[in-house]
Image (cartoon, rainbow, N blue to C red; front, side, top):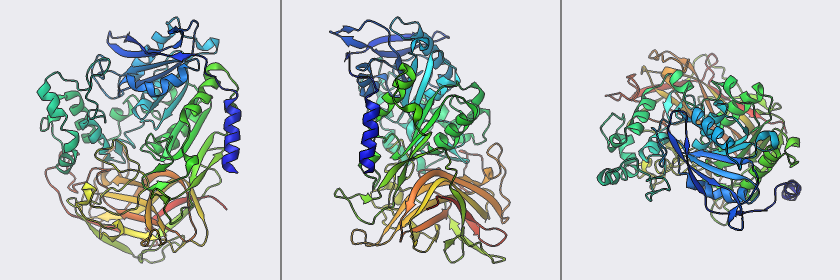
Length: 631
């Protein structure tokens, strides 16, 4: 019934959308000048008829990308045939565009200048004539959209940033003081695309001309495990020295922990520059297993909705990074409804905001989420764990009716809503940075180093290199503290922000603490040992427990309060399942490993074993706050 109703809604919306009226042909190539004289390589797809550009003016959909402008051919034809001009532009220093690559630093100005150039073209329909510019792009392509809004680009009228890189001094690159090693992999593959060796339309993939240098750079992605095991990274010690723009960025990002102007003025920090952000409609899209969910949902959507008059909308599926069209992620199957015809979603948004068509967008609720579960302990025909779920509309995010409910950890390993009563109670474990807890799934991207990703049974397997060839459950490790509820007597929905309030101490002056929320499935014929499915995870570096702006070392042996916020979720823990919280001090290679010595970041010469203690008594009640949705 739900599926049928959804189809009716989509059919009604489609009736008010643009129809196929044009042909799509090869792109025109342009070199678009920026204000400093640098030119950026650009592809323009125009509506065609009879092999020639169709007369008239059209609204534009723009993607500014570091991944090669020819990549927009995956969506350009769909929109061109429906009366849009599609444009792909390579950012500075990439695929023949001039200038130096500096992450998003230049994108606010460059995006502004690109929009100004579009506005001067004879085929462009301006916003005052029911036209204008809309933007698309995922990940880095989401960051360039936020940058163009921060640059207050002319003619910019609507955006759809997907899994958008943003606010990444807080989460995403640095993460509560730790470093997300996927960006090590991104840099070592020169932009997460090591397989692309053919020449692009405007130049080769590798930003060097020497064939010997290119051959050496091609080896870098395969050597990432070797290099991350040998951290810290020092300038000139790897072949990355051949591309100093990339080496300099990575070393600075790994060394710069304090959340200051370096991160705030990175070019894509939305929450630090709200007043500069252009007031336009934005459809924010992300997934529960994406790498940018906290920034998209908890930061950008919330803060722009609070400060702007234009409509802000939020769409969250059960997806991994860039996985909006798929319905299974990691080892989990969420049902066919979970995957969307994403071009149709974007067309509906742009037809309304760029063409003034009544597609029904104006009547939508502000938030649409996919509620995962309740999972069943059985396999689908293709061997996936059946988690399932359904779409639901909400009026706000976070959901107002959610009841923030503390679940406390106890010495005996239980997790319950009963607060500890003991005067003193704690659990101590040994954290050896030479043997970190391996990452298995989660909100990852930049595969190569970090695959697999998404929802996965929390156990090591021999084919995962961080597992060192072993096969065991994370719950068996001595350095993972496991706290879980009894089997639930009814389905229990958790939807919203996931925040751990941790009381802990260490004999080290600096160490990390990690948290992971797990859905524990009961044993079944398909899963005789049950399943321990990851829901969310996060980390905090001890020296940044009080403030991300300034480091302050721990006092050995002195208990301190830590806040660990995971990315949000929406999941029904099924009847008979257990809710579990795992606490430890590493999650590698999702995050870099703390050497426990208190040396400057990315400059340690030593490693030390730390004795870390989690407190769970009346005065220091470690707990996770779960947003429970009433039945």
